[in-house]
Image (tube, rainbow, N blue to C red):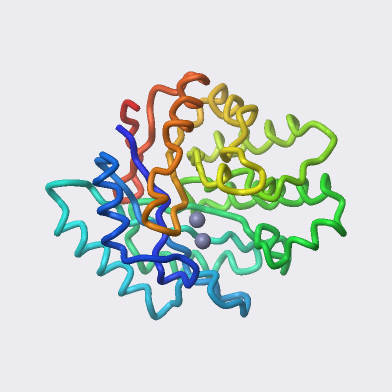
Length: 264
Ligand SMILES: [Zn+2]
Ligand SMILES: [Zn+2]
């Protein structure tokens, strides 16, 4: 089975199209299961159009429920969410998440301090930084995210490479450390094709990192990170070829935060 568990909606302020159009696009591409996973409201920082607003959460959830019902004969639709991991507000995030019943929760890291390192508007900051140190900081933050117990899936695990900045030193040690934590805390890793549409032109995770995930027995999900309906399941043929080359035969699906592995 092929699933796309990473689909956004215009409620986040930087995606386009109606939610129904994403569903239609998935059906047209032959998918049997998808999940919406829009950006959970950010409340620690005043930046517009990066996430949904808290007051729109009921709208998001009701719309997913409505589409589940409307398309139940054609496709299974999950209610997911993508949550920014912010160590400073971990407790508050945990309390807020208790108010909802998601099928799965993506944990992601787009911030290092106040810097949105993957945002084109703040790309210049990369030129001022030591790239290796940025990677170290990113993966150490990700390690805390994995250990905090709030999440089911690590979204775009090596997002830090998005603009193509790469350290001249190898990253194997960092990869081993993070996958060790992921295994220990029983999370999944998302194979996210949006990196192919970014300057780095690579899937998240890289082949080296995905191999380490496989060798560590970490299950995977798939996501396009679509912000327009046409991008649903975009480049999944490339992701599937990669998964098969590495040896993955199963994919993780979720219902009510419970994981089930199904054949790819
Ligand atoms: Zn987004
Ligand atoms: Zn996303």
